[in-house]
Amino acid sequence: MAALVKQLLKANRTSHAFYSTNVALTTSRYPGLKRKEFGVVVDKDVKFFENIVGAPNVIRSDLDGYNTDWLRTVRGESETVLRPGCVEEVSALVKYCYERNLAICPQGGNTGLVGGSVPVFDEVILSTERLNKIKSIDPTAGILQCEAGCVLETLDEELSKHDLMMPLDLGAKGSCHIGGNLSTNAGGIRLLRYGSLHGNTLGLEVVLANGEILDNMNPLIKDNTGYDLKHLFIGAEGTLGLITAATIKCPTRPSSINAAMIGVEKFETCLKVLSLTKKYVGEILSGFEFMDLATRQVVCDNLGLSYPLAEFPYYLLIETSGSDEEHDKAKLDTLLEHLMGNELIADGTVARDVTQRKHMWTLRETAAEALLHDGYCYKYDISLPQPVWYDLVREMRTRIEGSAALRCIGYGHLGDGNLHLNITSAEYDQHVMDLIEPFLYDWTSAHNGSISAEHGLGFKKKQYIYHSKSKEMVNLMKVLKQTLDPKGILNPYKYLPEG
Ligand code: FAD
Ligand code: 2HG
Ligand code: ZN
Image 1: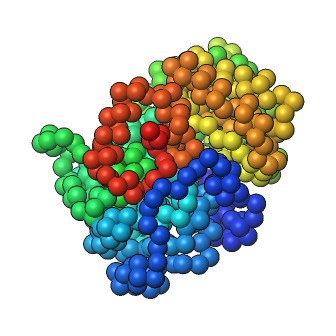
Image 2: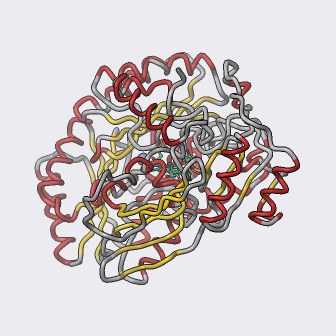
Image 3: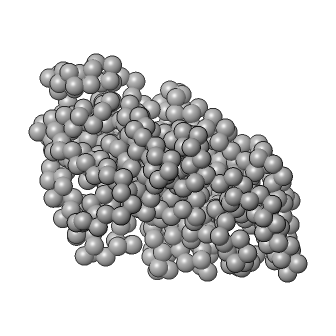
């Protein structure tokens, strides 16, 4: 898994040609946008920045990779990237921007999927690339302290030396930064087992809009003194402050991991399999992922991958993690025998070795990349009650029939109720977009779902926040934003609707 995903992600990120072709400027695709009255970076600002971080860390040319998002759907026009190397430098830069009224777009690995990580206009990009030091690992307590720019996979590799692991894992792990993960409250494939970053984060260090440093890095498991401020910044997508470091609680690394892929004829049966899986292997369950046939087709068509099973309407990838190989395998076998015996599953296969297990994960985790090869991808990340989960994919297929859409596919973290619905076309097509939005959001809201399960709101979804949150809640969010960032310099045009 990791090798192919990493290779694909890296290839995209570093290729200048990849970024510079055919990505419309955000301001052209969304013509109603108006630049707010922020300052513009001039020579004296550049001199100041260079004094703080050194000239090589103020980048003023060849910025396509920083201005364009991973999906290649939005593109800003920033002319300045700043790469601070410590919290004091971040603080000095932000304080200066605050005084000069210069807008800032925080950026980690730039793998975000909602247009939050790139500027809309000419915001200064503050990259965490150089904030990449591990401060400490406490193997006994299982506590990691690190800077925000550490790459998730690197952290996991370092922790493995102490029999620990990161409590989250996702397809972008070779590129995304822990600061970006925290800022999006990223979910991923292990949330089912280890819970969200709200639960696993013990402390944060944050630079506020005025440059003040908020140090709450204390590695305490229990601390009920005052409001738990760190939670404000987790999932705030850089709109309330810049996360510069974190203290994370890390679980013990399992010594036995098993995976099985099964083919299923009916969606309703997938839900029965989920219940039975919890019953039979609940205490060692570490992943329960769903792919439909169209997901199989996109990774086979566009990446040349192959499935270990024949064609079925639905596939489930079940993973267990524990400490006793024999016991864990026996439990998984019992589950599969039960499912087969009761004719709940059409076919299934257990990974015989690490290579086969990684291959199963590659089939699931490269779907996002495979979709991009079609041209343009309309990406949705929805939470829905499980009984109606797949109905939305069916409805969308009917709705886009006869349009320029190439495919409509559903995959995701079924164990958490998180559906990834993706539609593609050869190039951006306004008619396809109008068929999808706002219908998809209205449908989700009508079925008591969330319009953003794990990717956030960013630039693309902010106007739909009311579909999932009440007026009173959004008003309180606006009060918080106004209090912490009165000039609105942190990641403007994102997250909260105007007005
Ligand atoms: P960026 O994309 O750089 O930034 C994301 C947001 O956080 C932006 O709004 C940015 O301004 C802000 N930000 C970044 N760093 C900071 C900081 N230090 N302080 C304040 N604000 C900051 N997401 C999931 O939840 N689950 C998945 O399973 C998942 N899988 C993915 C698979 C692929 C192949 C890809 C491309 C993306 C996936 N994502 C997933 C989406 C994405 O949210 C995560 O990749 C990740 O959390 C983003 O981290 P990043 O460092 O790339 O952040
Ligand atoms: C995943 O779970 C990511 O693979 C990306 O969250 C989802 O591609 C997507 O829609
Ligand atoms: Zn996901």
